Image 1 (tube, rainbow over the protein chains, first blue to last red):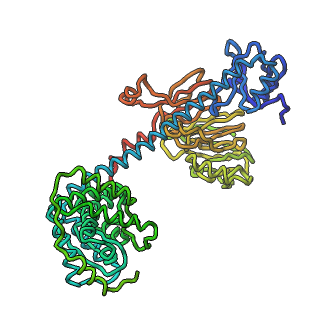
Image 2 (spheres, rainbow over the protein chains, first blue to last red; image 1 turned 90 degrees about the horizontal axis):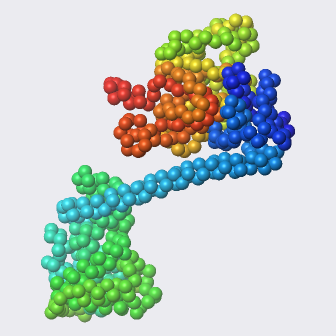
Image 3 (cartoon, rainbow over the protein chains, first blue to last red; image 1 turned 180 degrees about the vertical axis):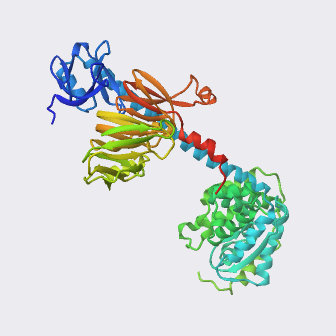
Length: 377
Length: 227
């Protein structure tokens, strides 16, 4: 057992067999004495003592004579404080220097490690986003037939709300809207097919490739045929801008990026169908929704349908406020009405003059044909 | 205990002569041959002791085995021959207090007065020293036998000394090492094939090995036929 001024340590000296021995170090007011296990005594006066710090642990204190022929060392954590106290401040400056040396070493390593960690994390994040960007850019090279295949399989695997509407007046009216818009699609190879479902859900969506579904809830809510055409133009824009493929890339970024790079569109189709089952394929980010609004306005403008009708639809929904039924899923996944109205107006302001023509649809007749249909609302 | 190291340096074995009741602790699998008057006991800590669970786990992290074999002479004049797994050298170190820091897998055997534990040398050293995450720490008094890949050479460091990464066998606790670049510029260091090196400071004994196991593996591995 060691006393308050006794420590376990060691000695380096040519006088020791082998040059090194373990020793008990005793501190006094004038210096330190090391007593080895073989009975040899070595002493260093504080005034001659040169301190250093190191060893495998980085905290071993070495006390050397000026000629460096004798070194007494100790790893005990209490040793520096005891040395400071017993030496009456004679070694204070040297002790402060070795403590600072150890501290700066520790800080340097921590800073270095922190730097490495930050760089690694940045590289990982940068690499991930670079891969996603490459994948998105690669979508252009994917044939439109892949979109069509994904849309067809996704529609087959979806469980749609309600029953399919076969009423000729209703179906023809919706088909007329699509027929006016379709020729103005900037993406060639798409064939838009629309299916009307009898359900109170105020919703419509377009799967990759152009397979569309419109619920009667939306048709009943709209005041004019042009308002429905506005919603459809927005949905068609998703297919034209291939947002479905982008959605797949966002969901399973790295996997899809690798598949696109190796040209494995089969895997892409399988992922798309899986996403389609949970409706995740048509749940887009705010950026993609805004782009669809802008492209929808361009589509309406080109088809000579007044884009302000779409803004009017949003106005109507805005006025109805928060009393909207929960079934209005189309709204829940889309940006705020006011922002969308602004987007529509902003996009329209950038377009040239156009002579708008009303759709060749008797909307009152359509509404009459819709009324006998089941409505849970 | 008397010892003799035979067939140095390529295929070294240590021939240990034990008096009655003398014990030597060896790494698992180190025994090559022995006389019939030696009893073997396997524990995770000290011979006859308990509570070696954590030490055993730490040794595993350091690249050693969880268990230790204790060979005790039951009669006078017993002989035990031990050797390492790899082709290489064996060196004897007389530990007189303090501790010896040994790279994982280089500890071969030690007397019962020596405690065999594991120590952490910090992230930087773990990543760049070419050694394991943990090192074996031998503390106390007694003989320690170290093994290497290739020959071992011993250096009495007085101030500073540089060893290439992957060539350290063991060093006394009075030595400290840092990972530094071999040349002035980092790119030059790597182009010169040296990259990062271990720079020792202080005073104490350092053991280095002539060959580097990972480099040897990289050289030979691709030439081996797949099984």
